[in-house]
Every structure is written in structure tokens, then in C-alpha cells.
Image (cartoon, rainbow, N blue to C red; front, side, top):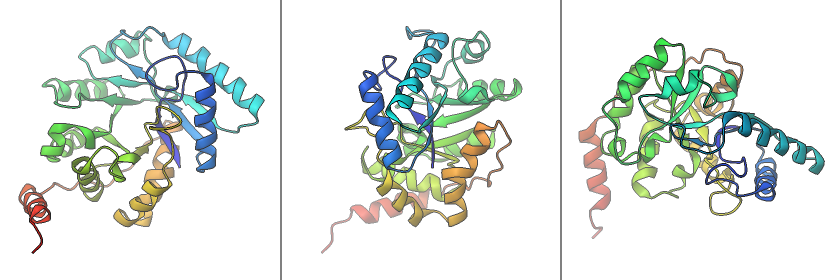
Length: 263
């Protein structure tokens, strides 16, 4: 598997607090069979103190340390960019990094809402040749209420990345259910650990992958874990299945049945 969403770079955001923790995370990745990771520190409208150039330097320092430790983990640079109306300007002025310098951009939405300008930003990104990948949509409160919000964004040209811990219920039952819905309706194109450390939010994911195998076909499993991220790293086109519109009535009834007491 290739992880396209990780906070392994130290000293930047709420991810690895220092180089030692970053090395610990690298060891866990390799123990779990991941050899390729995109480091995606948070970017919020020029408000982070670490510049793109500084981030590159930190990545190079980490690579040197990995080599000294004999750890063969390949790490590419990116950002998890919090959506804003100035996102394109920030990209073009060099404040933030796309994923491995490609046209693909990992975009984070607010957890509790979908701003009115989201569709406009997606349209403008696509117009400029960029492809937005929405990070962990299954955790967004509005998408949990109505998965077809994501359906509409995908129809407009966005892609989406699922957090593997969501499948294990680590963020709660509603998020776990939404993750399964999105997968079953062809609304997820990439996976990520969203790892922030070596303990509570570590890049351990073997259980989640076993759960994933019970939800999607073997072909889709291969696309999610390897083919799509490989094409992304090469800046090539990603061919996806058409998303399937979710039936709210069916979802509501199934949730209601699950909550009824068993007599």
C-alpha cells in the first residue's frame, strides 16, 4: 500500500513532534508493509510558520536519518491544505506543496460544515489543471448526514481519500458507517493513515485493510491501495468508476433497524 496522507514530518504541525518520533513512525510503516508515503503537513492560508522551502529541508534531514538507520522508506512531499478561497493563489505563489509536485492536491474541509465556496474552489482548481482530493470526507458532519454531498463534488471533478482508522471505528460508529457507504458507492479513490504519531495515531492499519477486503472487490482493493496512488505519484490520469448516488431512505431505515432493541 502507498499512504498518501501522513504527518510524519517532525517540527511542523501536530504530527511527529521530533525526529525520534518520525523515525519510530517510519519503522511502524515498514513493519506494516508500507514502503512509500507522502508527507502531508497541514497548510492553512499562510498561517503555518514553516515555509515550503523549510518543509523540503526537514524532509531531506529525515531522509538522511532514515538512511543512517537503514530504513528503506520512500517519502515524498505534499501538504494537507485547508480549503480557502485563496487556495489557487497560495499554490501558484509557492506557499504550499501539491502531492509530489503533481497536479493532485490534498484538500481538507472543515469537520462540521461545507463552506458555500467549495464548489467554486473545485471548479477553479480544475480550470487551472489541478485535481483536488478531498481528505477524509467520512469525518465531515454534513457528509455523514448526506453522503450525496460528496457524490455531487465527485461529479464536479473532485476525488476523495478515506482514513483507514475510520474502518475500525476509531473515530466513532457514525464515521465508520459513512466510510462503508462511501466505499460501496464508488466515492473513495485513495487511502491514507492520517498518522500523527507512533502511538495513539500511529500508522498501524493491517486490521483496517482486512475490513476493507470485506467491503470492496479485489479489483477495487488493488486500485485503492496501489494503482491509484502509483498513478498519482507519476502525475498520470486516474480512471475511476462512476459514483453511485446514495439512497437516504434506505440508509435511514437501516440505521433505524440497527438501533431498535432486540427482544
